[in-house]
Image 1 (cartoon, rainbow over the protein chains, first blue to last red):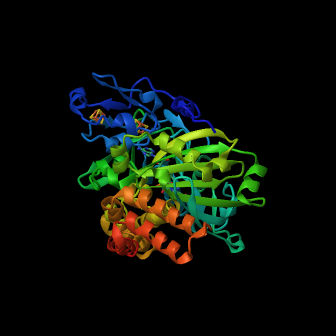
Image 2 (cartoon, chains in turn purple, blue):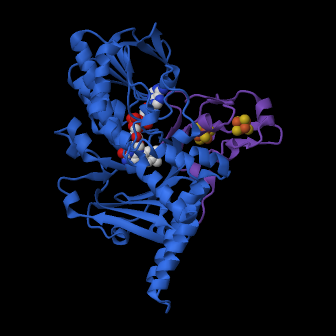
Length: 93
Length: 435
Ligand SMILES: Cc1cc2nc3c(=O)[nH]c(=O)nc-3n(C[C@H](O)[C@H](O)[C@H](O)COP(=O)(O)OP(=O)(O)OC[C@H]3O[C@@H](n4cnc5c(N)ncnc54)[C@H](O)[C@@H]3O)c2cc1C
Ligand code: SF4
Ligand code: SF4
């Protein structure tokens, strides 16, 4: 089996995307000082990216696992669930 | 929504919540079953092995109709080397009747299980997030939802909102989990024709097999992989402790890519089509992470209360049983007309007397063990050494057997930091598994 790109993997999930993000970086200054930028690694859906100046949040890709909520060393992510009925819907589970 | 008051509100329609809602509704209580997904199961996944015993206890007449995949007749454990494995397993016809466990997929199962609660009279409110608990002093009296005028009131609230349990956190009964108290698992459901699955895994008709693997596949992090046979799909996944993942700077799906290339796995999934990718946290703090279980007007159940025996990958059954116990406590509270902690702590008592506490206490040292020991030793160097040792054992190369035996021991000693280091590790591991 050839390696799958993350975009192809996420394509297997049905999303109902809200206009508003359910994930908010509390303080970009904290990200600037953050040495590890580890949210850009441990997220299973590549939601976070460091542009060189700030952390961007592709919340529409989020699979709602909660890792970033617990994993960000500075608890710098305000994390709630997408509104009822929004976000991911699995077919198999 | 009308400002009606219910006997109980259950937040979350996973196995824990649906079991609680079913138990209470069947006893005639007025129950709301609240779920944030479009339907129960929409947001959920597990490995997944579903156990018969605890399901039958809740649904003695209907458990046979549960939508499951295959009856598990064989369980395999693989200790993975770089391109090899040490294998152990057990297959037995006796697992068929009475059935011990099945493989299952949560989207189907959770819907069916929640439907049982609804048929028994629970009021389903789906596509709705419980955003906070409504309290009066130290008493929980209801739930605020993200619907307009969405406050709901009840004598008891059962918190069954899963591993992230924002409600449990808001109640202050557990602080945020530490990264070492959870693992992140990523999974793929891979489609293959039935006959291929049955041929590759040595199965007949509805028979199924489970494979758990650990070692080199988790890339030096504490973790466990799984490969389970469904009817015409395979469930393949791997979970690693989040504190280790944080340090490794590796993406979770790259671990999965690595797993898929292992020769033991590659040939089993060959030609399959990935139907779904998914990810979820698993509570792995063990008994020491379990929060207070009840209070005035509330009980907390399932993953939200860290009730998972990760050593035996049992979670859904602990969730169901804890949900049932909480439901039973609320039924008693309704009889007495007292929903205070005094009555609801019946739930704690039931947990304490059950296999849930006994099993979690037995393994309570395991979390500390995995947190303290070097993951590279446990999940990389030792598994590789065990593989080298067995390679040596079966290799006929003219080296006398006595010398081979020495070589085998040396592999293990070197990996484990000498005979003494190895012995100490063995003792610590033994203690961790024996409370
Ligand atoms: C990869 C993986 C493999 C596993 N393998 C196995 C296995 O093989 N066998 C086994 O027995 N167990 C396994 N488990 C564990 C098992 O899945 C869990 O222990 C079990 O699902 C816990 O049930 P629960 O009802 O407590 O929580 P969940 O199943 O997580 O259900 C919680 C529910 O609450 C809903 N919810 C959450 N917050 C809110 C809110 N605020 N408002 C409304 N709804 C909300 C969620 O959408 C969800 O439906 C595995 C887990 C994972 C992640
Ligand atoms: S890990 Fe936390 S602090 Fe660091 S960049 Fe990511 S969000 Fe910002
Ligand atoms: S919840 Fe999970 S998938 Fe969503 S952004 Fe956080 S780590 Fe990524």
